[in-house]
Amino acid sequence: MKLATPVSISVIAEKIGAEIIGDPDRVVYGLNEIHKVEAGDLTFVDKEKYFDASLNSAATFVIMNRRMHCPEGMTLLFCDEPFQAYNNLVKEQRPFCALTAHISDSAKIHPSVILEPNVVIGHNVTIGENSIIQANTTIVSNTIIGKNVNIHPNSVIGSDAFYYKRYDTHHEKWHSGGRVIIEDDVEIGACCTINIGVSGDTFIGKGTKFDSQVHIGHGAVIGRHCLFAAQVGIGGKAIIEDGCCLYGQVGVAQNITIGERAIVLGQSGVSKNIAGDKTYFGSPCQEVRETYKQLAVLRKLPDLAKLMRALEELQNKNNNESQP
Image (cartoon, rainbow, N blue to C red):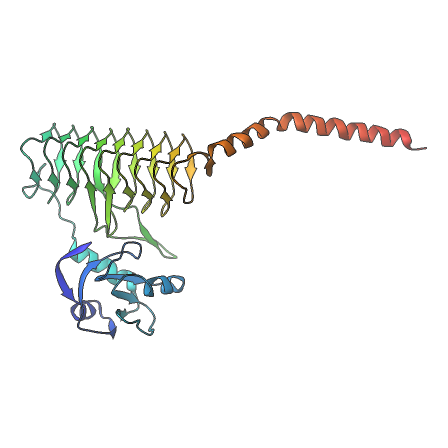
């Protein structure tokens, strides 16, 4: 997420009670998780196994719980609780603001847009011309919707990220500061849910079509002209490239990439990166021909088991007959 107004790192350090290691005169332009950072962004790390990734990332600022040598071009902030510090900064920059009307006065809705009964539109939402928002749909604050978008009844666009930091005694919610961005000519079926990113944006590319009951996790990036059948679930920060087709009940794990024009057949589970221009099936999925070969072998297992038992019985019989 980009800050509405850039903030000096010295001001942030004072606010969170952190020690500055490096240049104190730089300015912060955004807050982002490590997966989404760009130059000018501030991120955090509180686990040693991620220190190297953070210090070698594109981030300009890193909040850490260990004093370390500051890489050139970075500024580090040392404090005891980096997650708490970062989470509080996101809350400050993107606070929860309750609606007091079905349609916020700050929403920018083109006059040609059709809003059916009981639609709820949050603060700072933008909806482009000729779009249709069908009955009982909720569009949460800061969502951007393009032209000719059709959202079917009872969908929720912009719900919070399902993202928690785990402690020994409890789970603490990450405050969601991202947005949902939907490009032109997208169709979203009934009862779909699209989460906002924790700090980055969840993105739906131009011309993509969703069936009913599709769920898109926080910060996922869905390419252009994709087709998702009913009950597809996409994990947080997954990347689905252009032209992919996911059949019904496909599940996609977080943080993975599906290449362009890949086809994933129904009820498959995608647990690692897969290449484009191929068809996949199974859980975990693999190329469909390989899966079908394995299934053909599995169907023969009962007959093979019977044959093995028969061979064992014959061997036992021969052993008994050979004994004096």
